[in-house]
Image (cartoon, rainbow, N blue to C red; front, top):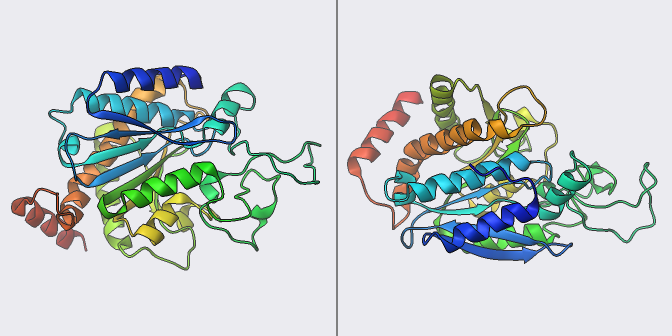
Length: 324
């Protein structure tokens, strides 16, 4: 089990793992404002498979999501010859989407969320300091009339859409694999929720009913096998004004079939500790495996490289008919 305690330890683990794992490829997607690498990790045992993208630590304080992703990567590599997901899908992981905020949360301010870009502005925040950073998970859309224009707020999402090096790098990766992208998962901490687009209550995703039925089955399995109780629903139903987020952008711009954000928390402690990593990896693995067992056989045949399994398709058509 990897328990990363600082940025350098994590990077050392990633580089060693890449050198010793033929199925794991490291890509440097961008350099942040403070010159840290935004790292992408690809797992593939073949070419042209449908792609699952998993993102962690868009919010600086979400350390647990990075630990979950890296331990899950280790699991996939260890079981590359037998894991059905690795057999049928390529994976693309971004373990730390916000490296500057991640480091700042470790070293200075545990609850820090934003990145560390500095603004050339004459205003000062109530603390007396100049405003620093924007919330990159709210940088995917620009809503000029909303309060998020205030640079001092923790939810500030910037003055224009996808303005940051971090979000631009993620956008490029998502666009590059969009034709093969079957699933996008954003990992967050501090709750037990699974949310699907959209944050705006006026809009409903084109497969909303199907995703709700899938998540109903997935969360039933979580309760049964892991004694973990997760709520699920649209972002608008479970949050107030969570605008500008990445999952909504992926859904509306790329029309990816399976899009959700998972908020992982083991117990009522505000901050997770290292003993939470293994059970949360198991929960994440269960969510993803059970989702793809259902949704993969509904949407997988739309991708040319997906293995056609008529019996599986009929089983899941029967499942869908039984729940609508």
